[in-house]
Every structure is written in C-alpha cells, then in structure tokens.
Length: 209
Image 1: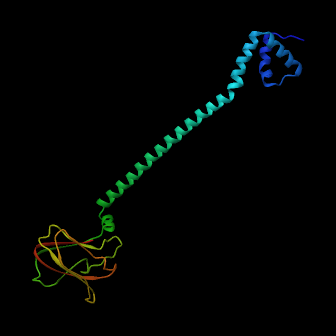
Image 2 (image 1 turned 180 degrees about the vertical axis):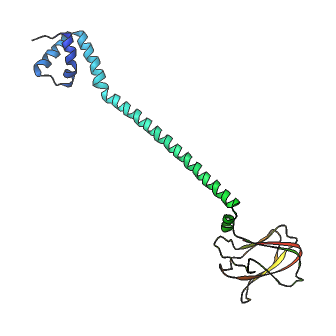
C-alpha cells in the first residue's frame, strides 16, 4: 500500500473528515493515521474542533445572539415606554396650562354663571335675580354640571326657587348654607329658567356651574 508524508496527510485531513476522498486514498489516509502518532493526534484535535463542537458551538452562538437580541428589544421597549410617558405628560401639562391660562378654553370646558349681590334683603319674599346675558338660567353646554353653589364667602344662607318661562315651579329649596350646593339635574339643557331667591345679608355669591 502506498504511503503518504505527514504534510500530505495534514492537507487531506479535512477531506478525510468529510468523507469525500476516494476509497483508495481513504485507506491510505487511514493507514497513515494508524501508524503516525503525531498526525493521529492532530486529526483528533481537528475532529474535536471541527466536527464534535460544531453543533454545540452553534447552539451557544445562537443562544448568545438570541440573548443579545432580547436585550436590545427590551431596551427599545423601555425607551419607547419612557418616551410615551414623557409625551403623554407633556400633552397633559400643556393641556392644563392652556385650560388654566386661556380664558376661552377654560370657559368652554368649565362654563359657569356667577351672581354677586351686595346688601340684599328680600323681606321673606321671592325676588328674581338675573343669571346670564338675558337674565335667564340656561345650561346650553354639555360641560355644565348643573349645580348651584352658595359660595362660602356669602354672609348668610339663601332660599332658591326655579321656574320655567310659564311660571311653573321646577325646583324649590328653603335653605342652602354658605359652602353648600344644590343639584339642578331636573333642569333641561338649552332651556330658559327664571331664578328667584330669598336672602338677607351683606353679600350673596352664587355659582351656577
């Protein structure tokens, strides 16, 4: 059987390992590895590096890549969440500043009628008060809560009566103390109502909201 040198054997090792050599060359290579300890040792080392650990190394590399990919995705999600929270906060703050400082916007979303009366004494009788531009109470916006509040700075309690344009009594309350409110849910929106009160004191402040 023809013999080969160690240098040729080293060149043939990868092909021998992959099983692509001819039958005759394979037998020659096999005989050389059996007789040459140095080449056999080098072949075993190459076999460990090329064949045996290839799948393990590939799995480890895949795990490492997957871990890094998950880490990148997590960082992007966190960054996206932070940016979203920041933008939402900016929108809320901006909206609040607009709401508080731009009168038209504030009046649109928090409409109200304010009535201030000084040195009043109705002598126990109902007295009409003017609410709004035409003197009638009209909740013409969905943003009204439909409540009346007697401001805490008022000097005394009041009695309240609300009637429609035909004079029909819709609501009547005998005593509303300063700081208290009364529900006006009975009143329809976009409808004119006449407001009357009984009061006595230095000042009465009413809010229709």
